[in-house]
Image: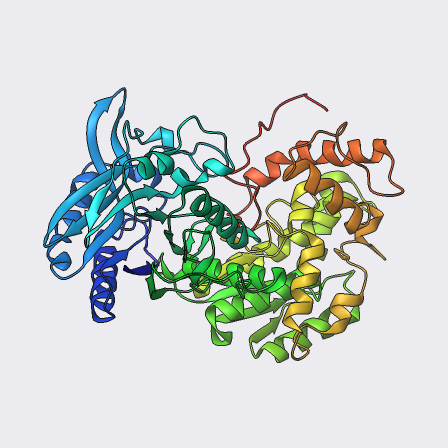
Length: 543
């Protein structure tokens, strides 16, 4: 049984363009001798379509494009994820389904049974679940068609087991069409899950996953097929479109799948997310990054160049009254190493004018405290946005997850921008990205990596004047955010008091208002700021 896995990169709402991608995949699979081609979950609408599903005409237009796919199945069976109208129950009348075409006509529809409603998923808002599971014959073999979450019963205790139902109904193999969002480590997790499913059922499974960025979500592809013992027959690459034909009757291998290690995987996922954010919105390709000479802005610039090309990235150096000499020299060296245009804008004249205004507002003082510090960041943010307006460049915010977690950032200052590249990357992982960038040559000056982090908004300022050391902060935040633990349940890092842990968690909660006003954050972890983590701004719970 020769099955083509077509991990395509659909754009949400580009119904005709997505149909073209599916038709192209079918033609290539036919030429390669495949019997069936599998395309991802909701491949025609793109995933996730969200409230486009409530927009007048969207489902009708989708249905028209879906039926227009039928002629492409004359020589090969096509299975894809698609919207499917069903009898209304309550306020819902749609299913998230796997649809099969063969011989020039639609031959099967299997609605998704398990509708995830957690983290970034909200499928019960839109879809009705399948009430029964069946199999269908494609190319002479009975197959169980399944959609993404239907295969996740090994990890999540659902009452139904769709794959087992299809095995009992006579399936000889399982096709799973997915739009499974990526985070670091997710590809290996999926292969383990599907391998366990295949061994449990005694059936080969072909899994095809969407690739590409859609808003904050990044999809890695990483499609694969496993044999009836759960061994990988073939695995497709991460973070790129690909089509491979797999013979499901070929034994798999226990050899580990070669894939990028964590830092390389993180860099590739972020670059894909940046690139598709520009491309799929048809934005001008120009990006602008404020280069401070620090590690966060350096890593952001490296990723922007990887995604958009050096000619499309502008670095702006904005020294102020407390900037060190090496801040400028480090940023200039980075720009030269990357081959990007850079400009220097001295903010001191604007800053001094603000001090004059502060004197009128607050009385003459030597130091206006936080107002004086934050106005420097806001001047820089305003300049970046002026460049954005004048030159049609998108500002990339540079703040990391550690800082966003505890509010160590200035609203309307360093939080300005259209996309927060590192907003789901802890400070320790930013350093790992920097070392990865320098693996073959020095791209980021070593001094950027070695020097103590500082916002440089006050004399001799260092991040650890206000924050715990980043290894300590990150260890507590991972337990609080990804682990969902309260202060009382967190294991304090060595040498850290429980009171210090409680202070960090309190800061995490009290800065939700800042995160709500920050740019879209690219998701790289199982629990990112944004749609996947929803906490009230106003609450008094501590624990």
